[in-house]
Amino acid sequence: MPTSKIIANWKKQVFDAIYWLEGEEPFYIDQVVEYAEKHLLPESEQAFNLTLFYGKDAQWADVINACKRYPVFAERQVVILKEAQHMGQIEKLLSYVENPLSSTILIVAHKDKNVDGRSALAKALKTKAVVVSTKKMYDSKLPEWVSGWVSDHQFQIAPKAVQMIVDHIGNDLSRIQNELEKLTVNLGARKKITEDDVEKYIGISKEYNAFEFQDAIAQKNFSKAIKMIQYFESNNKAAPIQLILPTLYAFFSKLYAIYGLGTQDEKTIMSQVGIPFFGIKNYMVAARNYSYSKVQHILILIQAYNLRVIGIHDADNTDADLLKELVVKIMDSAIMDTASVN
Image (cartoon, rainbow, N blue to C red; front, side, top):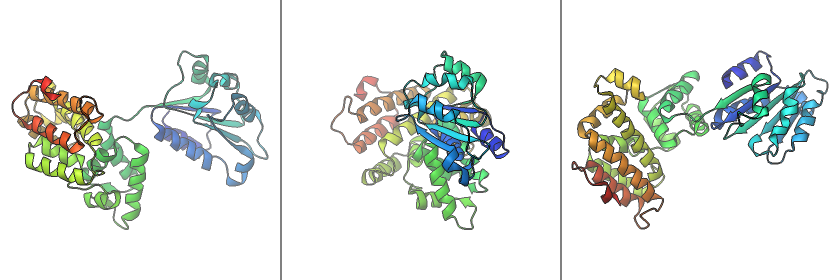
């Protein structure tokens, strides 16, 4: 069941006894827990009927005892176990899961990983609880997620503004949401988020960012790329190399996939590779500038420079020096021996 469905059911006063939220993506888990903590009970009932536990400090027996209490002057009570992955002997919750109290709503937030599917607890949860397993969102899905969030809040956003946000923040959904909320608050009566808004309120330069740097590489615009590296060197928060390298790797990985399709039909490429409509032209330009074998070599180069960034085979060069070296090797039309990378 999607987390949005859980909250929708709660708003309609439809409740299950146990909600087990687990997995790698904390954003959706936090959404459910926050709503439960603030809205499942009227404020007047929370003092007596809302119990919070934190896994690191909680004992399994205390959680079960709290769940077995009856609500005070109310129809139901709510018990929330946060950071459950840190609680010792969590499998001991099995006895309660098998026989939950109908007047208790137990919400367990088990982040970062899933319970062992072979365990008795996992098997009991499948039949006795609402289980939500979350996964980290693929980078290719982030633009769609951002556009969807903006649309759901009755705003619009320019495609380039979407890409600026995604490339700068990555797949931290909580941070993206915080930045989008900041943007919408500052728009006033306007309903469309532009690149200028992203630059002004989030602090991402519309000219000097990982997205524009990627475009310069795709277009084989050496002078623009070097100029941007000089800007990054003086403004180290604009686009750190730890952000640029994954961005480039993702770009050339998709370009590699395009070659594998064996077609130049843009609609097919966008559908099969997961490229938004506003980005396809740049991929087609890059395909003209970089051959299949060159793209293979570039992917190896980026991996090698990623190791150098963390000090493997390199301890002296600055991030700017490494980027300049990488740009020269990427834009060199000759296929170099990979041993020369180190």
